[in-house]
Image 1 (cartoon, helix red, strand yellow):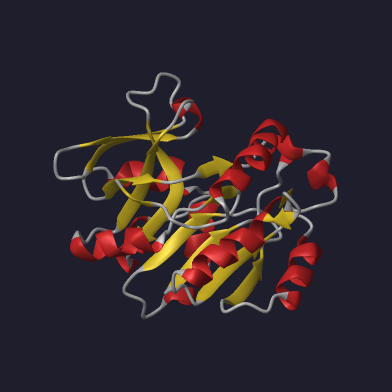
Image 2: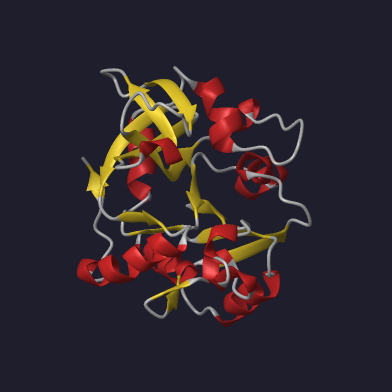
Amino acid sequence: MKAFLLAAGLGTRLRPITDIVPKCLVPVNGRPLLAYWLDNLGSHGVDEVLINLHHLPDGVLRFVEEYRGPVKIVTVMEPSLLGSAGTLHANRGFVAGEEQFLILYADNLTDIDPVLLARFNAEHPAPLTVALMRMENPSSRGIALLDESGTIVDFTEKPEHPKSDLASAGMFAARRELFDDITPDRAPYDLGGDVMPKLVGRMNGVEVAGYLRDVGTLESLALAEREWPERGGITHGNIS
């Protein structure tokens, strides 16, 4: 299986660390986020990932050159940020011929097995299956409402007044039909803000259990450093 591992963000809220380290290489207890992601994906049968680069790309390229794990890595440079959906559109040839593929936000630290989403999508085909988690601060993420069948019937990106605490975890299983709804007319063009609202009624949501921390601020990085050792570095998440 292939995965888009979206990693080109500037990481401005992690300054001064990201003045010299790209966001996807920010260390958690001495190891970069990207290393944890590749451990997770390789252990669950993902054999190839595409990583998009923009800010401080040389560090990521060195990391990729030194990587010796089971996952093949393809890198693409974005001179200007395309946004999550813009990156998918520009690199849709990466998943030509694939029935399903994964879309993952690399600034999360997680022990959840993302391939679980593909298994769910295989049983409940849809252009997109979204991993959902209960969040303490849902206004910072995309918020979904589900019907009894697991179809997302409402989705709002970072709402001021969330209708629920069921938030996108930044992990998705997708089919190539998704590209029919990705029509960039500007950059950046994002999955959550521009594409997913068009898919309401046609995408699945599945609540997942496990550890997930958006390591996007200095405060959340400090939390991850305290919490992650308790997880034992084992990827064991599941669909709840």
